[in-house]
Image 1 (tube, rainbow, N blue to C red):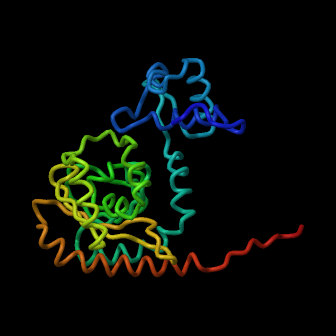
Image 2 (tube, helix red, strand yellow):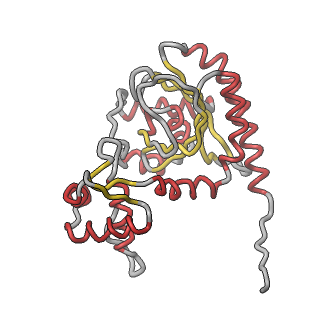
Image 3 (cartoon, rainbow, N blue to C red):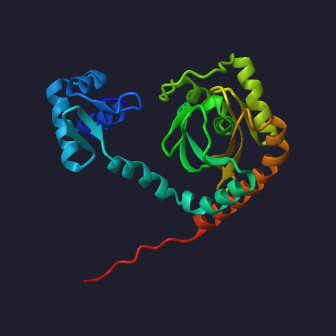
Length: 269
């Protein structure tokens, strides 16, 4: 995250505050003041003021072990998800798909070279990697990411893949540019993508795009399965047709929602 902006309207203090929030990670949920300062590159007095401000606002709590985020931070991410309206539209369709496949279903969007999960209906299974709203994975090694990357222009694709992942993961599949481009061409041609343990052992999935009323890809939806329980043939022959139907229903409902005129009604006192 840049700490200095390109214009006079850039607020450096806000950038530093967001940097402190994003410094907390699964492997370091609790940090001391020194650890926060080191992780962000901020001076200790600056990090301390930011942490105290976040604590007063309810985004951070402090105890004898150090500082930790509070659940209120979820409000920041859910404000984005809620503003889309996509979750409310998608949820009943995703729940029906999960009932029929007995597999987890997720929706993600692209953020640089990563995907970020914005909606999920899960079934209780032991998998290699935990997924929840806000989880970030390298895009190229996921079926969701392949669908989203395949929808980009050549220039946008190169820009996205040039950004390093912020997931903290090292994927199993790390293709050369020629192999990568061939895979994305295939995804673009067939309209769906498979991932077979490309990210981590035991994870297998199929994904298709979600579109707005103008046909633009706005997200992707998948069915995720354990590789030991679900074959590639079952993903393609059983789950993919159901997933395509679900994606069509979600896209149609989202297009209708987006097309509804919105008016702001003032209330006179």
